Image 1 (tube, rainbow, N blue to C red):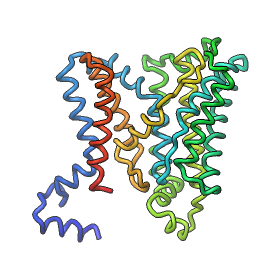
Image 2: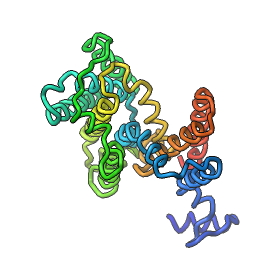
Image 3: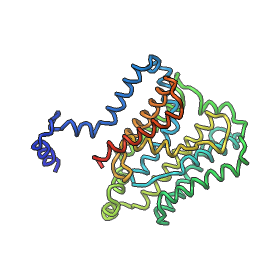
Length: 325
């Protein structure tokens, strides 16, 4: 099949590249990486500050929290799902983490991860077994989660986060922000899970053709529940890091993070129809957004224009991926 496709493209006059690949095929496969490299090069030319190590670390730090959320979102979208509740998970975990500081660092971390996983489990069960649309189920959880955060905190900031927890979220290790290290570790683990485990193959199979996956013996409902639990787990961890960085717990934490995470996944080339995409692509998508924001800040561009530019980037990414889809 692959040889026939390449042969037909050669016959139609597509320019060859390497081992029979056309330039169009190369751009289709590596287009996001090319866009990222061109953006970095343009940023370096437009701002002499951009390539300084401190600024690069700042960009990575800025995308680390939404990047962690986007990693979990990637698994969900690969199954042709969506998770709009991730920002609310961040909010609820943030206020709970601030409130239970007296328990110590490790118990608070376990609590945050458990809360995030539980909210993901509810989403997964409702979608896989209750046959509720992912959009509706996670939209309901988005309101419920943030509502719980406001009810618990009374709408007021919760102070008293201890130095050990602030060090966890806002500290440095060998000169690198801890949040960046967490993001890199979870990125590597996510790539390994998707590419080298049976679970990763099941996720792609469910997103590609749910009925065919079921006939092949894949337990589709279980896979769907697992990806939403994973998304909740990653969002809960992001909430813990956010609380450590902010130093307080607020119910407004994570507002709009679901849109930023979805944008990173889509820009990275993952299809909203499921079955196609990569975790590394999500990293590139988050990095493109982060570099764009950083460059516009360095150039003194109005924040309202920055939002407009984000919209253009998302639209361009969707148009680029139409041919592949």
